[in-house]
Image 1 (cartoon, one colour):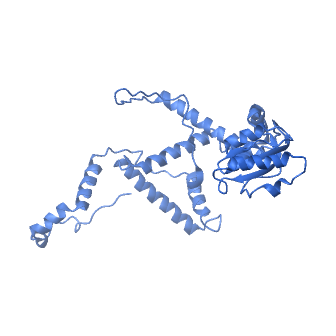
Image 2: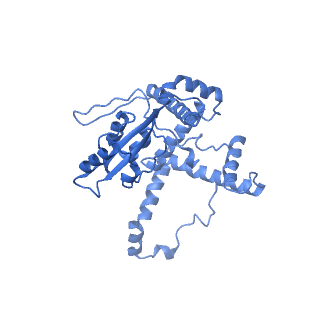
Image 3: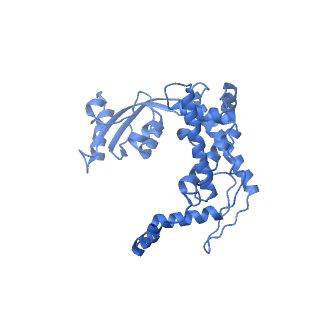
Length: 318
């Protein structure tokens, strides 16, 4: 893809241009666009030629991929001939700019370009590792059998609850809660709801796991609740919101989950492990093929870990 200049375009400067004021010439020389053109021209001359970089080959698969990407943004899955030509022309034009940019070294020091190339390498590693292959039931069940200990159902508990807010009792909340407990354990039955202040719990259900309760009570309070004796009102338990009296009615659970119970989590975990495995394989191969020469400030040390950092490619922008 080349072009030749016409004789008029290469003719010597006219007498009119030769007589331009020196101040105009100084402005041209000082203009930053002129600097860019000079630097770019020098890069163009000095950049090493490459026959392979100068050849743009489009395979049928690549053309189909270009059309598929364009079709995703349209209303029809099948592009008309005109749109196919336009999409391929734009792809080739972009490739021309990209190749020439690489040849001139314009990718050097560009964090956006660097991150995108890293991401594409991650896509490559995942594809080579078979991450994009469909997840079968057989593979999921094998993964489940190998990781059963990670899918234990938490123990759940059903409990009654009386709350004393630190907002209404900033200094005597513990004393007020203890007085309420005395009423609850007295011989005359008392409805706990009639003694409790409103508690804005967001995740409370009939049965709750410790994980469910942490958000509303805090870790320290949940630990005390978990140790409370079944059937008896606890001593006042402090939380970031106030004081709590708890009577555990029943506990259940603490068992291994079934395959169907955790199927959705299995799919996510299985895919995540496959991605991590593909990145580890690429990382270990490249560690052997590349030489690392790192110079750090005095007293600082560094060595590459045995595994990759765990990052994986995100296909949202693809």
